Image (tube, rainbow, N blue to C red):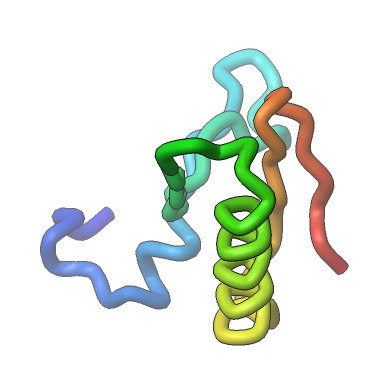
Length: 79
């Protein structure tokens, strides 16, 4: 494999590490994560602003998302 800093963005999307004893199962895949921290997160106006932020993110990048992880750590693969 080529050195990571020589790979294109689309090639980086395909970099995976498989489980040592189950080579057909992907254990690690590169990805981006976004974590938002807000003051007064229970304030209705703050919650509404965070929801709008999530909606805009979904509108901008939704077609590229393949996995969603909620704060509990549970995730669902998209389409």
